[in-house]
Image 1 (tube, rainbow, N blue to C red):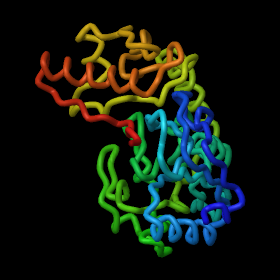
Image 2 (cartoon, one colour):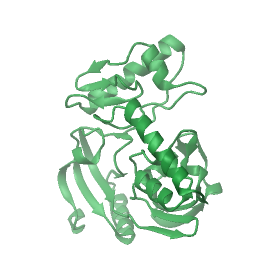
Image 3 (cartoon, one colour):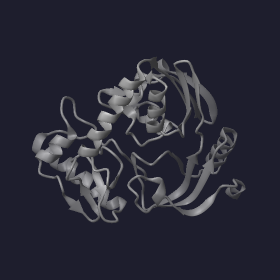
Image 4 (cartoon, rainbow, N blue to C red):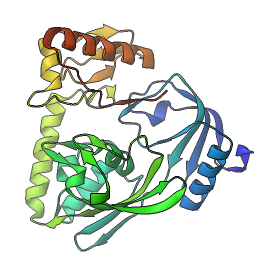
Length: 287
């Protein structure tokens, strides 16, 4: 029985586990802080053909109103420093690690100081901004794949802009190794302060959202296209295209996942009709 996992909760509301802060009930919720127990759980779920997914900080996903399966929340947060090599477990917050490495005069993650995702989730999508991406600094990762512990070098993984072959491949990231560069701490902290101020003035941080909705097309900006198409401020139900940054959808007034998805579809249809550009969704819709 699944009840043998002591942290199990039934009919659990994930409202505080997704950054859109939408109500989403899952059949089962399990918190895991031991990779041996994680392996045992995955075997149990596969043997019993139970649907599941692993949630990070919930910052790049759109949850359903009801998930008829098991949501696994990892609690693996250890960080180890060995010179300029940093080992970070998958539940570590990326923005926290970015600030911490900058304070240690290590360059390579400072661009991520405002990204509210976990190391594991950010690695799977090759998160990035300001012309940087996570795989610039990754050297290897430890994973659970097909219920086997494995280590993959950077060259073993296909990756590109906001994409890796890790996604949708029965892979759970456990630990990521970064190679950073020793540099001047004050320069890094100054850059973080500058970009934090910019983010505060250009992003709707006073509302719940899941970050950028669409990838930027080549040599263009999704936000610019959406704004030029006249969609800025558009509201469906409780969801709204931000007045501050058009590539953000915000939870304006008790939004549901249906409200958010309707806005996404409206944007995609409008941009294609006006510019013949197919915007690619950066966020993941969980079914």
